[in-house]
Each structure stands twice: as structure tokens, then as C-alpha cells.
Image (cartoon, rainbow, N blue to C red; front, top):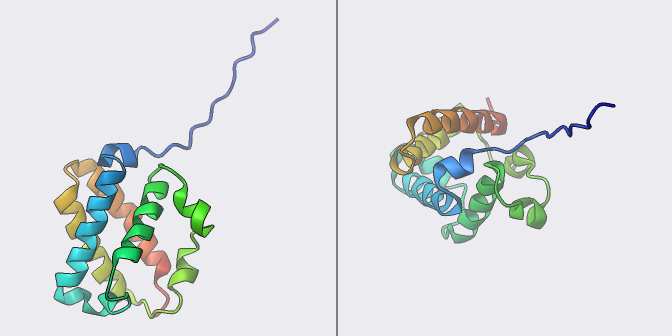
Length: 136
């Protein structure tokens, strides 16, 4: 008789732990929106947001915490992310995508000390930014 060996599948994403937890995600989001507020090349994408970013920041923190393998508060409150649909009302072209990535890269440089993680997150954020692009 053979012993039953359970198969354990792990879809756990270690990025949240490597970054430093939900507080580190909040710092990343703060740095991202500060970059958006101050970078000349981000003026067009900043104009797509409300003047007060508090609500947007809270949503993005929840999304990123979940996306990085943490608590599923975003989906519990807002459902499936559907990022492309949520951004459809805005014209997001290659320039907007590039500005968004410039802000995210600046925020990552300021808040993520792990160079390997920065590179992994940069590649993952690029996929998201490119997916959201909806205008030529």
C-alpha cells in the first residue's frame, strides 16, 4: 500500500513580503502619486485624477496589496479588478503609459531597496500599463 502524499499548489506571490508588507505598498503609492504631482511629463495623467487623491490612493493600495499576494480586500470591496475597463473612459496612449511608468519607476527607486524586486515589479507594472493602453 502506498502512502497518500498530498499535492500542494502554491500561487503565493512573495512580492508583498519582499517589499515590506502593506505599509511599504502604501509608501510606494504615496511616492507614485507624489511623482505624478511633480513630474512635468505626468501632467496629462495627473489630470485624469480627482484633485484630492486620498480615495484613489486607498483603492490603489488595496489593489496592489492583493496583486502582490496579500489580503483580498480590493476584490471583496470592488469585485474583479478589470483594469482596462476601469480606465476605458480615459485616453491612454503610449505617452500616458510612459508617463505612468516613469512615475512608478521613480516611486520604486525611492521605496524599494531590493534591486531584483524592483526589476521584477517594473516588468510586471509594464505589463499592466501596456494592457491599459487604449489609444494609439
